[in-house]
Length: 88
Image (cartoon, rainbow, N blue to C red):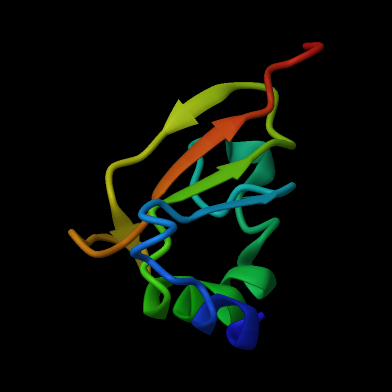
């Protein structure tokens, strides 16, 4: 993944989106920590690649964050959007 992200030409691809299933940042108590292992490995890679937006599902709700990294607001972090409300 790091190799693929390093190949992105940000002049040709000004916005970088990532999509996966389990959201890292959400307020649903039933799903807290579900993606922690994945986040520990992948979030530094996404941050280094300046990913702009992370889309996730799983939680049957809609929620979005400000730019965040490592659990804190960060102007260089990604916006996280949970879009798991489809079919709910």
